[in-house]
Image (tube, rainbow over all chains, first blue to last red; front, side):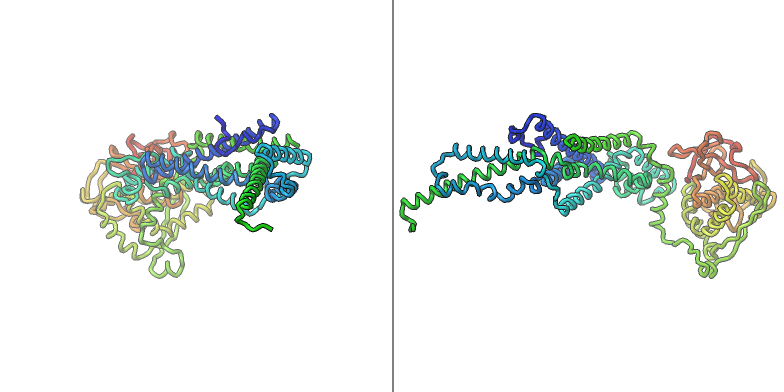
Length: 305
Length: 290
């Protein structure tokens, strides 16, 4: 199984990259995808914990948890993949302003040479241009990375992930300390049965409805379970929250800060691929335009100079 | 340079999976990280406080002086030193105490919880003063327990009956007079203390008449409010009630257990100078209020 396929790693554009670089890039994107899958599993566990308390039904809990974990996986994929861009590299100048690239080829259109070329010849021009551009970046390697990424977009991404992490970290902590929480809930039930059998809390929160059983936590109140967790862990909960927060933001930090990714062969090849496709369609469209003009001339629909 | 870049990414991946492993370890050792000791009490207390209408006594001199009276409690501690506490009780609370107790109309052990819950705020001044003395004398955990329990044991025994008998009476452990007042020989007897033959902690504070469960409940109220891990213990075979104290080495004492399996060392409160650790008869002691 290709662990990198779900985040869109396209091996077909890497055929010009040497073996070592290809393997390294493949490893990096596989590692990122495994991280994302691990986070999705954590979200799944956390959602199961929350939904079993709320719905007290395995089917609904598992279904809704699968849905939530897929949503989070895709949000992560979106946040991470949109952080991988070449805009701030030297190659980005060509990627953003295609004219830089087309300019050299104006002579083709000026001299009408393009109109006499077939598709194979155009593809060759594009292919050669792509190779030249690749060589140019290899020679200019020292200068092809600028860390000027927009800090605002980075902060927004981090805030979104922190919100997600804080939402689900409590669920994971509840899962970790399930046995101890259930022990405390049992203790509360036993005490209340003796001390105050008519207690609202006992009859509405701590005892299941007639003929039913609690399936995960022995309480139907999420807030009460969280209160027990907080009382039981005290300051240690903050430590656990921080650990889980670090797990959730690690993929984004790696993507945003690792030069191996930002300046990696995959990002370069992806940019070259986009530039060459765009260039190819530019040339084809020029050719098509001219053929349309020729047809119009022939039919004398348009008045020519 | 390339190696440094590789090291940075690899370190990130290792850190990520190390954190995952740490979480799995927490799952395995979760019970040692989780402090269960007083959570159930906290939750129950919070719930009860939310439902309570009455407001705890405010320790504002003006308010306390308007309708409160000053009481004195004198006793000799286990080292034979004289101790005294001066504290305030609200006059209205004292007037209403009997009616409130009689209104509960529930049996043992449910009434213990109701009385504790109702009186713990009314005894705030007494508790505060005891706490203050314990702090100023720099007493350790056990000596603080001795300080409170000696004050209760110093008061002579008075038999308290509900509607199951009348004073005077003759029981297996002695003869009791017809007078509902503290007698030096411990032969006082109070009957028709409804509904279950137990005085509330507030009544015990100003009447000083009390038998085993009245004393256990009073000691529990004071010590629980001070933060000690205690319980009211009862034994069906002995028809008796004592105070339970949770200690790290409870197995070395006569002990009873709670429904959740927690062990409490037994402490007799009806006899003066009965220390924690002295043997208490019976093997069916259970905690009914903890």
